[in-house]
Amino acid sequence: MPLFYFHIDGEGLDANGCEYDDLATAKCAAVKMAGEILCDESDHFWDRMEWRMTVTDESDLSLFSLTFFATEAASINYTR
Image 1 (cartoon, rainbow, N blue to C red):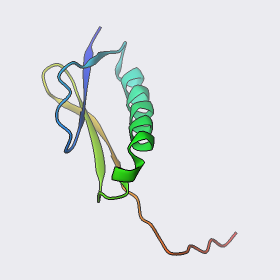
Image 2: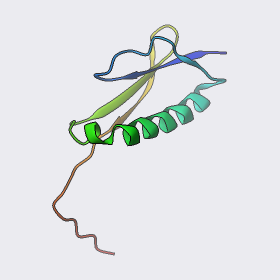
Image 3: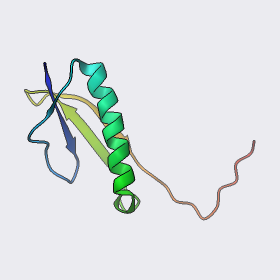
């Protein structure tokens, strides 16, 4: 089973990795993991310009990345 490494910019490299059956399963896991981290660290997320998770394989080849950014506004008027 292949190993996938979930690296977060500014927080170090994932030294252990996680085993998943395939790339599609690793992508789903990355989205879930990112959501949990962003929720748990929401105070810090809003202080940063950008938050990124890069997923690599065992040979350190970048497979994909997730990039999030947030913008706070005094007020927002949505037209429906």
